[in-house]
Amino acid sequence: MRKPVVGISYKTYVNTIDKATELVKALAEVAKNENEVEKFAFPSLGVLYPAAQALKGSEIAFGAQNISPYENGAYTGEISIESIIDMGATHVEIGHAERQHIFHETLEMIHLKTKLTLEKGLTPVLCIGEEAYLENKSERKQVLKEQILTSFGEVDTQHIGRVILAYEPVWAIGKAEAADAAYVQQTHELIREIVKEAYHTETAEAIRIIYGGSVSKDNVYEIITHDDVDGVFIGRFGHDPANYKQILHTVKQVKIK
Image (cartoon, rainbow, N blue to C red; front, side, top):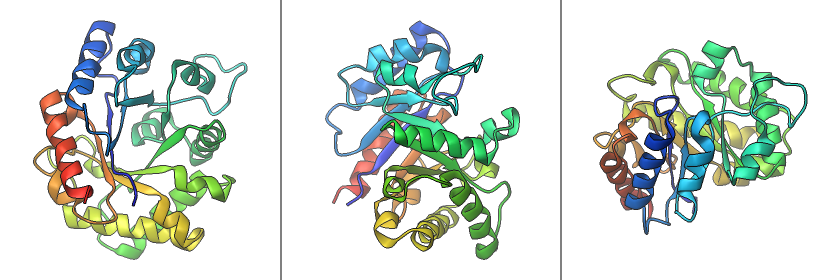
């Protein structure tokens, strides 16, 4: 059975040491004794170290929202994977739509980051998603297939099952409502199908696929009731620890049988 996942990213909304540490400590408190669900948090990069210190000994893992595609060298302004490993990070968010659209990340760069993260033993949380609502399943599958296969590229097949695929339809990020649950669930089926066809059944069964894009305590139950939805990736609706706790509890209720 795939272990369910609840991840949260703070983007650059919480950028002071006091606020960031207070918030992650509150998350850790409400997440106590929920070890049947894998939990990770991506603080703002500027407060990554103090947030990491605040999460030490808790049940919430942490990681970086971005890394350099290169381990070290003359790459001014980048954050090296060596630094986040030294802080105790276990996860790396890769290829978010905002990184692609605002900062012009290419799929080739995303591939390099994915490959490096896996080689260093960390878990890539690889973001994928179509730009616009695509009713046509074949068209949607083709768009996602290109993203997935290019992002994996030369990654050793035996490591692909360790990736967490975060399905985030670009048109649903930051909106008042999440994508329709039936659409999300159908897309998760397509994603697992893509992995199965490109690699093999065991990899497709091992890889975890989570949904991100306006996830809230009000819509999470409907979204995750499908077998191919392994959890959620929360944004602004998780800034309130009480909301986060309810989302976490719902995922556990549905997924732990």
